[in-house]
Image 1 (cartoon, rainbow, N blue to C red):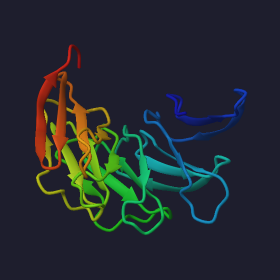
Image 2: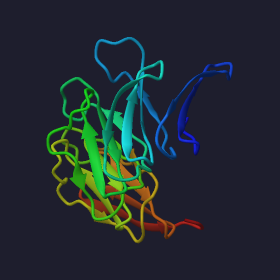
Image 3: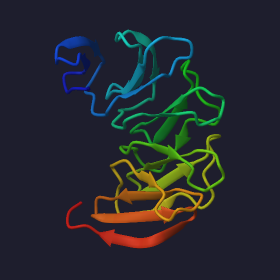
Amino acid sequence: VGSYDHYLYAFNNDGSLRWRFGTGDTILGTPAVADILPGTAGLEIVIGSSDSFAYLLDKDGNLVWQRGTGWFIRSSPAVADIDGNGDLEIVLGSMNNALFAWHHDGSLVAGWPVQAAAPIFSSPVIGDIDGDGAPEIAVGSDAPLIYAWEANGSLVSGWPQSSSAAVKGSPLLINLDSDAALELVAADLNGELHIFGGLFRIYLPVALTRP
């Protein structure tokens, strides 16, 4: 778990401290834990920090690599095989309007980073939005726009879609109508809930009682 004291903490199941790893600033995002490195035992941990760096750590809290994004990171990372090569990629947003995607070795995925029109506080989600059988990457922004990109960094046809205010939270991908594609659900700071299916807003924004 991340902390305002700049450290990422790992605890044993009895609550005792296993290790801690120091970054250069506050950690606001949630770490992702997955088997990212091929041929290694155990799971790896990836986290972004307000010091502008993304960090990949091994199971013992040792640094594997760090990569700069150029500005604060408020987003939580998402991990998935976005390019179909059998290995996991790491996707993470930055407050300099950029969304990054790295291979497990820290090299950038071809076509990335991509640019939004405003800072990305939202955490990305990954899934098949357009029903083509391949994963897309979606994220909210402060624009207010909701973006969706293909694995090669090109925008999904018909995206971005508008919201009435900034989308700070992570969108949700869920199959609401049992077709081949997932629907995207996102809430904005005006208290509206937006639901998109493929290229279209399939439901009018729903007003929530609070943002």
